Amino acid sequence: MPNNQDLQDLVIQVRRDILRMVHKVNSGHPGGSLGCTEFFVALYNEIMDLKDGFDMDGKGEDVFFLSNGHISPVFYSVLARKGYFPIEELNTFRLINSRLQGHPTTHEGLPGVRIASGSLGQGMSVAIGAALAKKLNGDDHLIFSLHGDGELQEGQNWEAIMFAAGNKVDNLIATVDRNGQQIDGATEEVLPLGDVAEKFRVFGWDVLEIENGNDLEQVIAGLNEAKKRTGNGKPVCIVMTTVMGNGVDFMMHTHAWHGKAPNDEQLEIALSQNPETLGDY
View 1: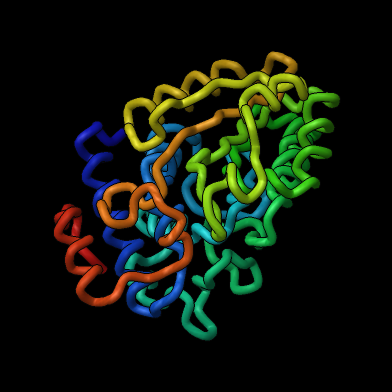
View 2: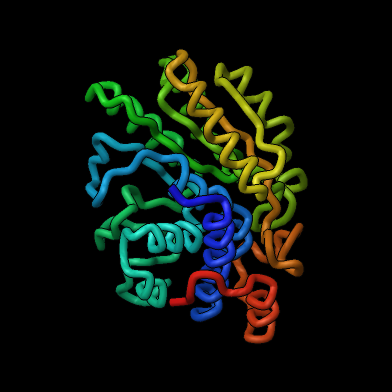
């Protein structure tokens, strides 16, 4: 198990990966990816019980689904640095015929990716289905999922959220990235979400909150607490407050970097704020 400094070093390296990937092709979504770096590093290196190797069934291990698929850069970086595929393949991000498309896809068989995502609002339904499948298979492992807060404006989520509580899908931990930003502006200006945690509670979920989702220790503690709450008849929701663009001062606290790549000068500034720790690809 890596120690905390190892994980902190990995967080910085993943940020570098994200920045370099989107810069190379002048395309992609750095803001949300940077905001969720600590979450992905913690999830894959500290929290989930994973098998060696990869198969689509995911039997006998915890399984993760990314619903807000546009933050694929952070997903790809963490998967590569966990050993799912060669780190050098990050060089192919968003290129024609690459396995690393802008939104995760399954037709090229990229290890670690079990659903195509990016059409927002659908990941909750998939995660619930997978959690029910684990119950039917007698598999006591957990399903984890991640959702954007703006994504909750899609109505399909709320039908799924009702279904999960009504059917006691208590082997599911769904995390909402509450960064308050989406492509067109602040979520509360585009379509107000109100008290997300309370909404999940009244829909019958067990809810906990991570006040600072960019503090690695808080993220690990929150995810561990969520695991303790599974198996008690309710699905578990984590509402995690993050800062879009975290770790790069000029990208933080704004929707402007939701889907924009840095230019050459901006990349150098951003990388200087995140000094190399483990080696670039």
